[in-house]
Image 1 (cartoon, rainbow, N blue to C red):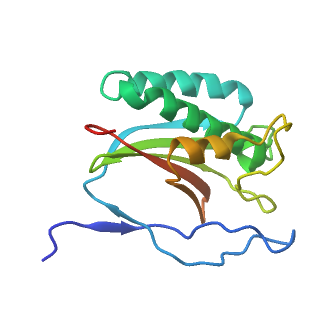
Image 2: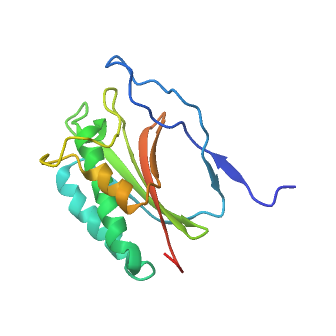
Length: 174
């Protein structure tokens, strides 16, 4: 008998080969142990004004037990949430004029904190690190996530949309 259970998750996103539709190119699996603890979850209305309340919620969530990494985690999460609102269908007005939502989930397992931001996805856009040069006024969000997470981040597509996630070490030696 197994001493722990695992949950299979989704396929990673890849850039579309054309503007016609997003295609899943790789079918790599991610496994999450049942030992994972959800520290907090927040549904965010897909409006730019909702990023600040999400930032305050996350800072409060991390303040007591994870103060040493709170600044970096809050910055990366807000970049991911902003990207979701600006570049996915979650930030667009839906059928009755209401915006969609973005889900922010913070979890921890075996000395690692994982933050996942899930949105409605997009048929034409896939998260990627922009290379717009040093004079660009935007496009630095995933650069920051890549740098501050030490390259421990990624994307995945699923029936409910798309998830951008990153991980940072917690506890001793973080």
